[in-house]
Length: 72
Length: 537
Image 1 (spheres, chains in turn purple, red):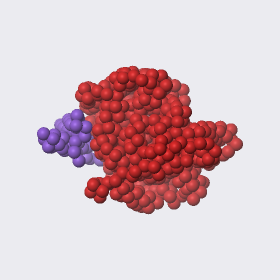
Image 2 (tube, rainbow over the protein chains, first blue to last red; image 1 turned 180 degrees about the vertical axis):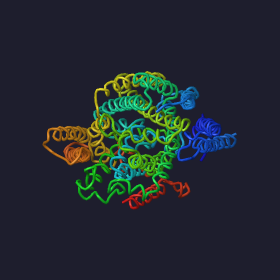
Image 3 (tube, helix red, strand yellow; image 1 turned 45 degrees about the vertical axis):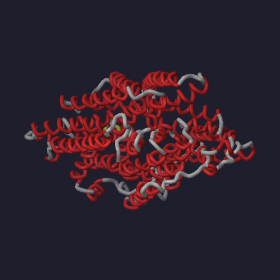
Image 4 (cartoon, rainbow over the protein chains, first blue to last red; image 1 turned 90 degrees about the horizontal axis):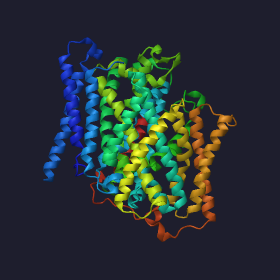
């Protein structure tokens, strides 16, 4: 699927937001990994879900990057 | 629930992005068509996600979780019966007229197909309805954040209105659509861990069933009689009232959702918009209804009590507080915040379009330059937000907001689908038939409501009354439109080309690979929906 509005590919802002949010969450999770209160059911949710958000964000940015290169 | 700095940081990050998108899009808004319909340039997957997202407001998310806690899987009828069939229908059969006729709004279609008075009726009721919906949404948001986090009601209303105003004022419908797509991903990624953690703690589907009342895990098994299920509805009310009248009335005629498809870049994209939306839509029950059931199964009952009354609406907030640590809580709160704000923005962008094209340009100032209407769109955006704030304070007076929404919805939308069905598929339907049929249908809905309030007609539950009221309204509209049409003069065939099925050339997709054709998607959606209904019967 090609980009969206040729004006501003929607994947740039959404990808950037999720990448930043994910990085922030993962870093916070990694720094507080010893705190049992931050681990629902024993899982370091912030760390792992932060990584998921980061990967999703980067994937969108990569798609936007490829689309813009194709257009040029 | 207490938020820490990390949570506020995530919320601030989201707000900064939303405003940033608005400012970036501002320079691409050159004509009124850019502002109101995104210049009809948007790709199908984006309009598709915006289509579903415009409906996935926080009220819906929290209300469906509450309904899951109260009724279990019966709630999924609002998706697998009450949404998907109508989404397939609007994509395959109605989009060729909406998109093909190049109308700029749903009321404008009514003017081309019928005449001025039907358009005026629809435009005015729609404008009032969107402003009310937006206000109710804003009010609900303020209440939720007050309850969960202790935020001031006035501050929440005014701050969220300010953010929405800025980004819709700058970027018009494109801003609204982009934020809806963002909100879609936030809701999915913000709530998914809740469903997964809950399922792990509950110990799987069978274990969950063991902890819930009998019948919570079935959608169809207990629908034989209204007294056999907690919703108090039977299969006919569900299929005809919810699945046909209410659902088709909303998904096929509500400009709020149809506007997203009108912004698509070509006919194939417009037709695929609701079909692409149907894929996530059919799985949303697992994201919102199932967590509601999990909350009811694993959390102590006293957590649901407010002043001694059980509040099912707390299901989702309680689950957020139960599982999410600081950080992830910020993401969950941002998801709710985003869905409240995009619900507001969706209503505002639909309102400013109908106001400018269908009211202002039609009745107040006809022949002006495009730039004049563009400016009017921005003024209407400010006006729409101001009216919504007024409506939010009005809603503070009413206790049960969802019923209130349903009520307005059933008066206005239930008969409307009768008008569109006859308008698009029966060329003999006349302007007078349509107008008087629609007016009678709306009146029938109102009379039915009064009759149930006075106890002249009784139903096992309020939901059953809503479903059956819709059936009466639609039938009245449908029958009277036909009768009056047969007695009045139809419009000439030549005037109806592109507006009525029998006089319009069907779009051909031979050039597209078969997997990418609207009809293929529709068949896939239908098969999956039947499968889901069967598995959770």
